[in-house]
Image (tube, rainbow, N blue to C red; front, side, top):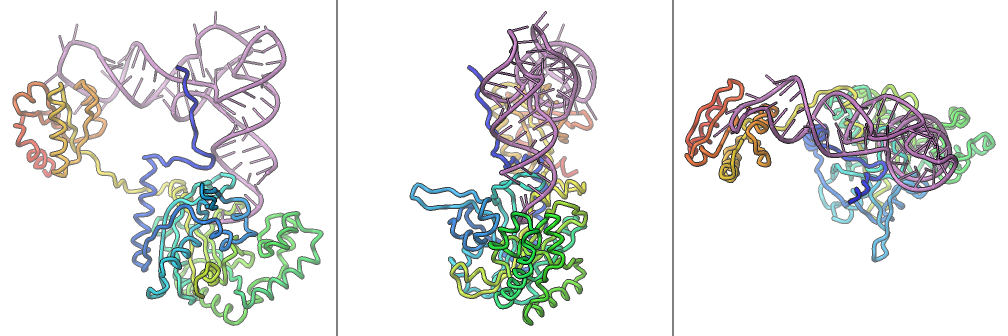
Length: 427
RNA sequence: GGGAUUAUGGUGUAACGGUUAGCACAGCAGUUUGUGGAACUGCGGGCGAGGGUUCAACUCCCUCUAAUCCCCCCA
């Protein structure tokens, strides 16, 4: 038979192999207790959502909605989308489950896969993993500061320093219109010098023009009006207080008047955790902000909220790049069970179960028949003892207990073996 | 969407326009028949896909696919 063609994982999607699992486990093991301590509760939302959830929240003019969504049609004709981010689904769930009657703020976190159809590269996959935290129902500046502080703690708790918080305030529906107008006026006079995509942005998503990477546009953006100058008193105070909190908590931050974020639902505080050495490519490891309008946009009642998401793929990569040692949480097998002959093989399964119940980490290799290869495996596993049950032993009702380090062995009655092993492992 | 580089067994690699595509590691089995790190022997396993150029292509050309990185943008 001709060999069948092999099938690869879809572009930008990858397998996370057993050897790698410990990194992921480690991150969650560190993160979850911290989040719980801060009062966040875990929840999960579906991987597919109505497409409209994202077009309405993330925004029509954004890259995510415009070209990065995996959208499919069901047999019934509904349009569903693989979630490209976690805030909108969380808010949808908050509204749908009537969580607004809970004591506020409602603090939620989640972790799982997200999907965006863009060009894969370092730290960027079409299926990627995010850990997100959202505080719903509290508009105070302290919440923004708490979230940023929490993100900072999380990274440093993982041994990852070297991130700066880039922060800005983009105002709210009260003061942003004036700013947008000022920006429009500013750019209109310079429209000829703009790059093609910025000419489009001028109409669709003017704030994005500030972080355009084209040299010409960068030059122009330098002298563009800044959001902070147009904040109304409330927004200004809010922003100022957030920064004061960060000062107090000694979270290093950089004011970045050009930070605007790619999603439409943000108001006031926006921030990104960027590596200090980020020369060209920006690869935020955490980013988020306040979204006081989103709950209304999705049909809930007026409720302020704030949150962030952390890129787990990037965190894991950073752990590896920085050679941060991860405790190996996998229990090491202490005992190997070797068998010779059919009768012994049958009995060994029962013994294996007895050992498991006794809490003894045991490995065996039932598929292997020769004592030699079984012992080789036992040795490679680094077990303390090997139990050998051969033809003779299975008839006698005994078993050989071999001490691998000492290379000595003795024969033990079958009914005593579990206790004997336990006793010796303790010593 | 645009650009650069790459694509040989599980992994890392070598070679060549032409007869059995080489090596290392890993895997499996064995080295006189019931005992383990070494050594030795053997076995399985490969030229990403499809077109062309050529007497002949893994080797040259094109397309596709994928990977890596960059632009864009984000986590």
